[in-house]
Length: 326
Image (cartoon, rainbow, N blue to C red; front, side, top):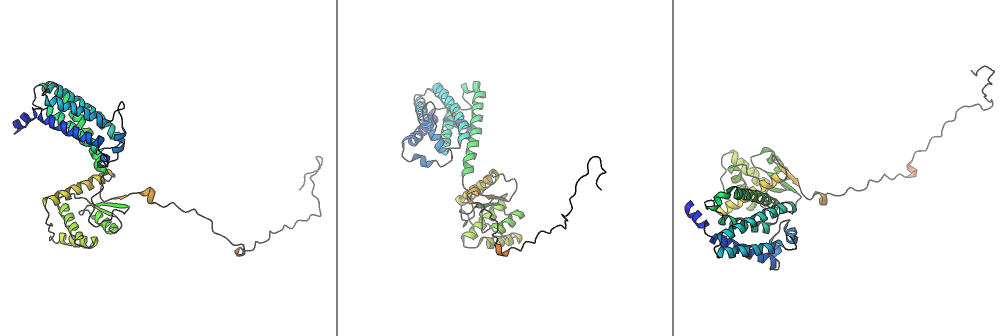
């Protein structure tokens, strides 16, 4: 199987396919009306406004994909490989810049096509690649690190996957695990006032969360469904719900996303309670005014006592030639 895969990659056909896909996508993002709506991450607008020597990165990528597709179609492997390596090096610089200005989902998809085109033209078993393997390994390692960083930033912007029936308008998010006693205490306290985001620490937690979500969808209140499932788990009567493979995959993806978001918020241990929108939601304190005092309620001021001084005699200090005053 490995020989067949390497033989397929040694042909320029995969490079041609990835180049045509990249060219089509870049042209669509450059000229299609409303194409910017397909990218919803924080760095999309900044990436579209970016210019390199007055040229948009989408136009530059379209031109390079077009040249790369032409070289692959003409079977000019050495020229195609050289252009693909330069293209990947430029993409590494762009990923580095994107890590600073914000992640762009559309740019990340184009970066994946660039890497696939380069990888198809530089298979590990090709003859010339053996002499420059350290360089190709450096390019691949650098690209993978930056791609993972940007992908993690995009995943961090995704909303959590809460339990059914949880309103997204709430300002508190609770990340909990059903096998954590402190999490259960927090869940009982914040069940009505927080977005409940479950996290599975093991397979039993995943089955418990699936059963809890099913009970909530059937109409049971969150706390009532939780207590019933906890009692069933103590008695050994907990049974996993019937789920399709797609439901299982969706559940696992949501639990993994919640775990990534909890880690992104700095939570080392569970539960993690996140108060979102604090500056906008927190009311400004009202100015403190002193209590109003009516003059009628004041107590009469006592007169200042006078000292019994006898002003009939005048006290004078003696002259220098007399005795001091006693």
